[in-house]
Amino acid sequence: MNKKIAVKVDDLTVAYNYKPVLWDIDLEIPEGVLMAIVGPNGAGKSTLIKSILGILKPIAGSISIYGKPYIKQRKLVAYVPQKGSVDWDFPTTALDVVLMGTYGSLGWIKRPRQKEKKAALEALEKVGMLSLKNRQISQLSGGQQQRIFLARALVQNASIYFMDEPFQGVDATTEIAIINILKELRKAGKTVIVVHHDLQTVPEYFDWVTFLNVKKIATGPVKDIFNDENLTKTYGINYKVSIQE
Amino acid sequence: MDLQEYISLVFSDYTLRTITFGTAILGAVTGMLGSFAVLRKESLLGDAISHAALPGIAIAFLITGIKDGNVLLIGALISGLIGTFWIRGIVAKTHLKSDTALGLILSLFFGFGMLLLTFIQKQPDANQAGLDKYLFGQAATLVESDVWMMTISTGVCLFILMLFWKEFKLLLFDKDYTETLGFNTQLIDILITTFIVLAIVLGLQTVGVVLMSAMLLAPAAAARQWTNSLATMVFLAALFGALSGVFGTAISASQNNLSTGPIIVLVASVFVMFSFVFSPSRGLLFKQLRFIKNRRDLELHKTLAFMFHIAENHKNISHPHAIKILNNFQGYTRKTLQKLVKKNYVTLHGNMWSLTDEGFKTASNLYNQQSRHE
Image (cartoon, rainbow over all chains, first blue to last red; front, side, top):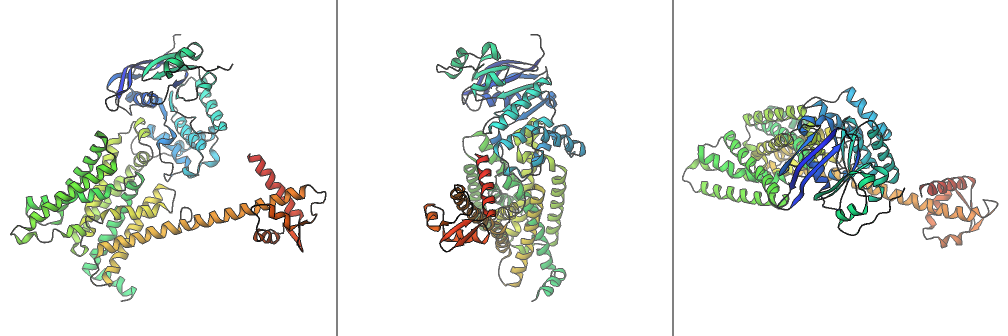
């Protein structure tokens, strides 16, 4: 495969205190894949994403997005944080949260105008939330809140999407709606990287996978490397998943 | 003294005018910035900052030897800022949680400030008297230049707030995301924090170290009850703060010997109490009323559904049944039956009941809705 490399991570090591959370990670994510990052709790999955996005400062290593540092390429990247990372009782509406996705391209001081509002409404429609646009965000269900977060990232119109557990605590309908949008993004040539927990759905949802447990265990196409050997290496116990065809 | 007389006095009497405008502006600016503190879950930061300002006041006096309000204010500002960034530093660099860091810095700085105050009081110089008024505040010492100082600071604060409104909102809601969009979160953070410190320091002379944090929190907590929009919340908090200043001053001016600061804080607390109870969407009263109403509706629907199940088995839906069978149903009370009759869902004949057509229709709709949800 001679595809372009969208994200490249070299010798990345991250630690909060003394114990490293990520150790010497090398990773190349080709353009246009829909990739799951899997691993047990505390494996450093969120940390990896946050380091790539420049939220966390690594101890060592370098990260590049299409060959350049994140800070120069940030407009190519969109981020969907974990739903639980914000206070949903914040006094604001669904539309307002989605509008935040336009703030990055606006830059300092400039306010969103008609054009930005239109983009936000389109994104809301895409995630099926247009009718709830003026709803106070605390009055949305978990699945609806996740859709709002996804819409906020869609507004950024990026090339690479990072998502931290977008399926956590959402209903089945929302899960299907979200995965369909992610597949659409891939079809449009975007790269989508998802921290994922449910191993059963990996073969069905994703075409690329990275096994992570402090160190990188394996990375590659799901059909080649999503097997019992790598699962056991990552999760430490004799792990077996029945892969449904 | 009637109201009209008081209002004309506010505009003609120098002292009263100064205090009224001073406390109103102070209330507005602290309310505004307090909204940010409350939404960042840093409610206690105000308390720590105001206590941390005390040694700055004392040191400024020791260095300059003059008791000019603005000089002491700069001292308070510097030590307030040092205290705040120490708190941030402790939280970032150690395992201590922010409540511990706040408590630590609060008592450390306050203790040091008290030490300096007692030291100053032992000096033979007669000029030192009155520094301790910063502990509880004394609105009567406000002069026109203080009010100007507050007005200018509030103006600058308002300007910055409007200029960076989008950035402030983004940071308050989702800090990590703000970072990924390329904004310098540290810069926004420092801006917000500096203005909070400034607002607190401005109020020390009037309300004092001990009660200052209430000025920051009370208007914001009250405002949050009434709205789901950040802009409205900030506006309402400013309004509640300003009104607390005006009413507090009026009460203290009409009653002799009541000090202004504590009364302003009490008035602000009245706003909080009122908002907690009477706000239509978040208030305790309406929440409880809605809860009771929902329960009653549900009870009624459950009883109707039970009757529907019985009636369903008969060809004639209005076939009369004994009231006694209803006793088998747990939620049944005489009252609910009465209500169903009133709604024309059920008719009674002696100790027999029967569903009306309308009752049957309502119940079957109810039943369909329920099963669709499951």
